[in-house]
Length: 99
Image (cartoon, rainbow, N blue to C red; front, side, top):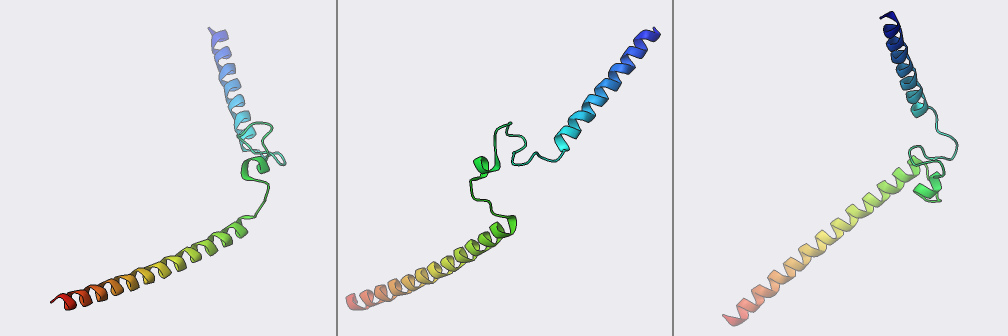
């Protein structure tokens, strides 16, 4: 009976050690120029493209694009409002001519 208890305790210990090793392997620092979770041969340039841009630069580009989008939106909102005014003016003139 003691042998079974010792064996199961040993197996539990082995399972804990293996689990700890797996966590250490998963959480360790990535190897240079490799992408974790995508296999052995995948490099960042293959996954993300050949052009490396730090997060700050990408954020700046994103902010600039968002500002440009807001400006375009405002421009077209103004254009639509002007077209509506022009349409209403033409409709009013047409009604006045036919009355």
